[in-house]
Length: 163
Image 1 (cartoon, rainbow, N blue to C red):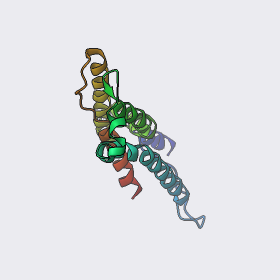
Image 2 (image 1 turned 135 degrees about the vertical axis):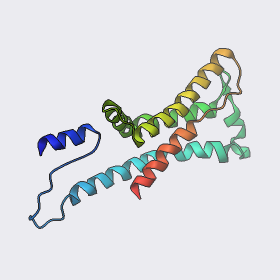
Image 3 (image 1 turned 120 degrees about the vertical axis):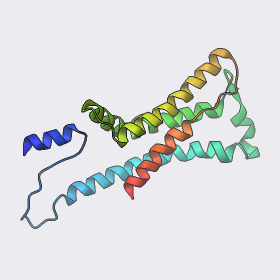
Image 4 (image 1 turned 90 degrees about the vertical axis):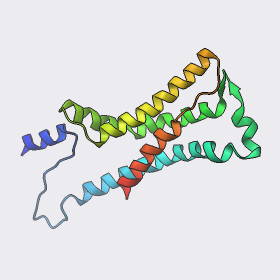
């Protein structure tokens, strides 16, 4: 059984022995812990993603914030720097489990949902980072960033896993 468990865990899945006959529902404590972990990750993702969405939708239309949001530092709007700072923890701390799962899956020569999520969010995140550096080095300010996309993808996936 231990070799089977280790092979399953190497593929990126969790596995443990189930002891029957002790009067408890098998694995209920582990499921509770996993549910609490997903809930915690979802709240963390929401804590950073909601301000990103507010910056994109509400703050750009509100007269109170319009001047601040459009202020530029090194030819990039300050709102873009704020979105970058908010998206980074979602991408690399909350989304860490996708990187681990993708690595384990690719190590065994297959691709799963973790690979798809990691690739999609990395493309959105690093294309935005490239756009910022391109705007700073070239001196133009008309680049489009996708920090909201990478954060929203991770948040929505964790919302689905929590439900």
